[in-house]
Image (cartoon, rainbow, N blue to C red; front, side, top):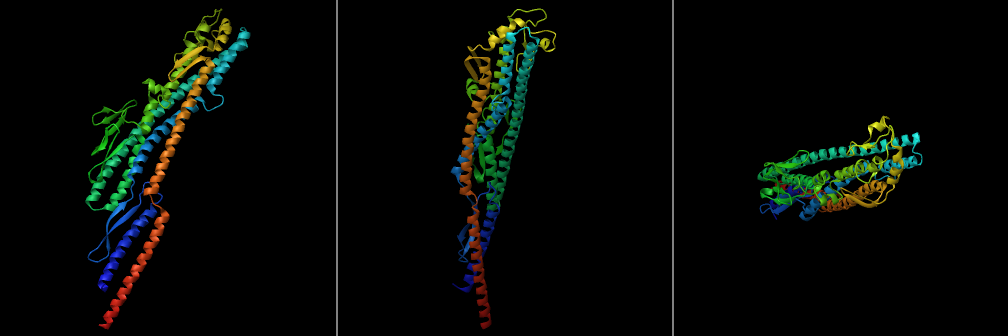
Length: 459
């Protein structure tokens, strides 16, 4: 090889080494970025210099793991959201406590009636019954208000989730356009970084709703639901939440039940008002509605239902100045209350009701059926316990599933990161090797330059 050929070869090698070191340095500086994929340069032979030249840039990909991660993010987003709100309901009910307030309030109320039945004329015992009745009503009211607040929180979270979906779809659309522009300008390194950003947005969407990705021209993508509804193709659709329905524009189509999987399905399912038997039997759906209806059924047992407390009290003989009927008033957990006449003392409770009511408290042959709950051969206390235990059971079922799906998502994320992410030790070793090669090549060029100088002196 001539000296000119040698120096040309060395210069092209130095340029390739320098470009490679820049890429490796970029990999190292982004090693802690979970959305960054390892980048490499593509080299081809240069027929003119006999060396190598940079022909392009590549990024590490693993389509199989990426697809699995997207699916698991949807599963995890669904169950983890359900778990969070079930735990809120559980905390409200005190279900995780050894002695939930609702159960204690009822048991105290029942015990007060039993004590009164032994001495119906005892004014102190009568006042204790009224005091315990007010405590029970306040607890039922508190739970109803708390459930209403959880509903408000769910609606707000749904609005936020829909906004997040719109934002991520807009971002994917913007990145699609930037990718096309960068490719047109031959900026492959920029394209690779934009693809990383787009993958991160797609992962965000995957946690919100189940999706399918379809490649389009010029490295762009389309995003659809598994049922074939377009979220983004050429342009993104826009979604709106009005407090009860999700609509898609253009067209104002109702897609509430079309956006399946992920956080959005979990929120919509939680807000369900018992639309079907399947929903009522699902531990992660219509949870607020079921809890509210179970409380309303408890209220009905005290105010209206045949063969219950209301009948036992109302059917007893009424003495002078006593409240004849409706010991409790209200039709729902929200307005359940001790009769105002008893609360303000303008009437007294019926002494003759003490014994039949105390007996009624211990009847253990009741069958009580309501939304998401049915028990037989039960007392009132059994029913309040069943409300608590069913909530515990539902929360545990969903929490166990959420843990499984989160572990699965973490595993896929880790495997994908290992496959396409930056191994900093590997990259540092490679950078050191490239630096040594660069120094050696520079030394070769310096030696050739010295040889040229010697030749010039000889000539």
